[in-house]
Image (cartoon, rainbow, N blue to C red):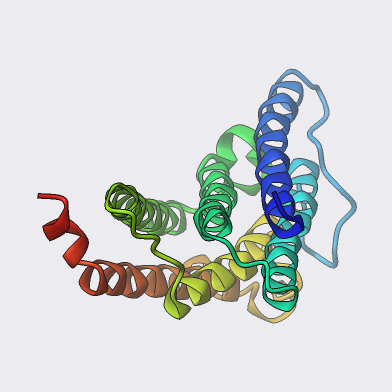
Length: 219
């Protein structure tokens, strides 16, 4: 296994550790008399659990850039890397988005209003559903000895997710300085999340259309 693939695998391990950490910290906070609140960032209250997850998320996201950069620079692009990298990305983004859907469990001080939480839930369902369709397509392709690499729209979706998710984890910081009076569904962090959802849909349709021959080959 080459260096870029090792970095990708380490990202998967880090994500698993993050998921376990979310569970443990959530349990600890649930039985703690004092909520885990980090120092205020301006007027934005940041839950400490969210802050920790945000830091881990950013580190994992950086390894996504690093493994791809090294693979291209050192000419170490492999089918294994093309297979593992999208899986690691989706695991990172999808796990964190699911975590964002349950703020009332892990961060009762940061509850979203019903409209914002509903819109967020719809976006998460759409993006995870898209990932399931693309993953199913990749599994069928593997059986036909075809490797489906990420396209530019899929990469744009991933980049938008990796920008929007830390913004949501940090309770819209630092943009809350000028959008705190806006309706929550229209705050900048949510707008980035909507853009990620739109790009997710577009890239998913492109994957299916460009690789529809895979379904014919599986008959």
